[in-house]
Length: 174
Image 1 (tube, rainbow, N blue to C red):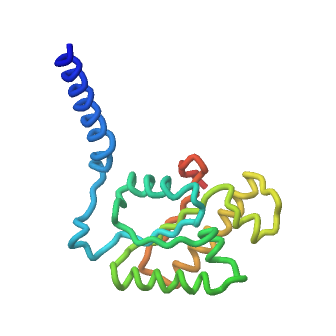
Image 2: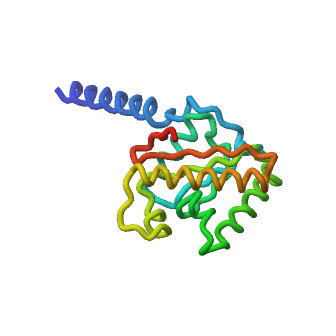
């Protein structure tokens, strides 16, 4: 009886480790990545909002479109709004310096900015207690347009991609 119990326990442990290996350890095996020990180039610099709710979702999305470990990162409250606003001018200046550094150091070819819905910065900078979904989408569109034009003018060799993420981690077409 004891041998049978030990055998069942061993089988359960083996099955558990196979499950862990197949679901977690190799979960990034579908993503092409560069050798991090020798890499000196990145595809892009990615700007996201500081909101803790979407950090993992942004990484998962970027991994899914082929940017796994292949971008520099910059976090800025409000993302495009944080760059476009004029109250804290150092925010835009700092991002500009990071873009220049990423272009010179890592030879990036693209600037990707990910805004998100229900962003607290929009309520603060637009001085509103509530913003409807439709109104917020329109404000994001305006900020995308300003951001893309400004970055495109300052860095004409870089492609600018603007993305809007919902709180469920899905990208919204705008």
